[in-house]
Length: 180
Ligand SMILES: [Zn+2]
Picture (tube, rainbow, N blue to C red):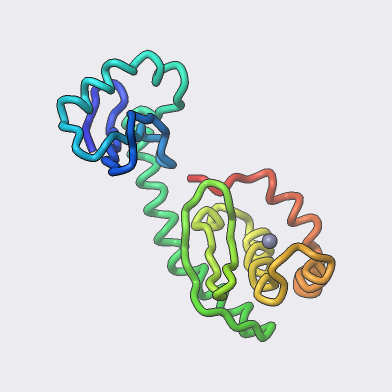
């Protein structure tokens, strides 16, 4: 990590396999650089300076204050999620007779939840920002994946048997984004 006066905290990843320098934006809105493994700090800074113009034009970097606000929001959300989501999942699993292995909390930007073939259910901490019926819908959706690893009619029938408004919920949830 280096601190730049324009871009704030910059994440530096040194990868054995990376050949050139690559700039991306992390989920927190920080600039992230991947450079070859043994790149010294002064070169990292030089690369950054050389590419300032391109970064400014092409990448949506947040200023340091926004970055810190996001970190804080994420922390608060994670705390809320820990105290709620595993219990809510457990509650519905018991109620409808599902067996899963593990509940994992994630904060990816794209998915509300997922269910793996080894019966691990992942729930996005962003669910804590949703109205309760939508939150429950996601939980019931992932639980139904324990029996159907697809979105077949049989899958939807099962979701519908636990959430009769699942169609509305599935539509409404698209208005929200899981990212913090
Ligand atoms: Zn699904």
